[in-house]
Image (cartoon, rainbow, N blue to C red; front, side, top):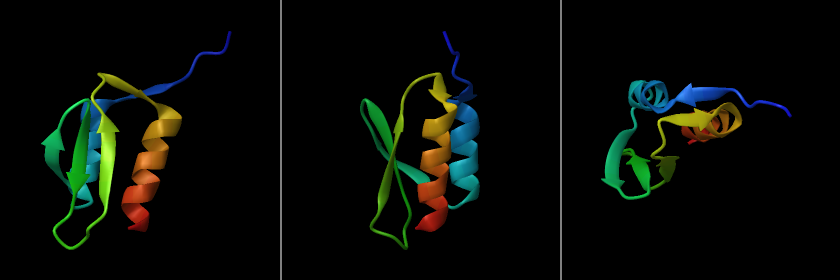
Length: 64
């Protein structure tokens, strides 16, 4: 069975904050937004997030 690498949620949130994103609201996912954009990014509220999910979240944050 293949193991999937994971990223700590705290590290991912720090990277989003460095890019100018901040937490807007919380639920099963924490929703991040920016003042200059209408786009939001959902981040799962797990201690560790799969690496491919974290990469997709950061890619979206950098695109927008």
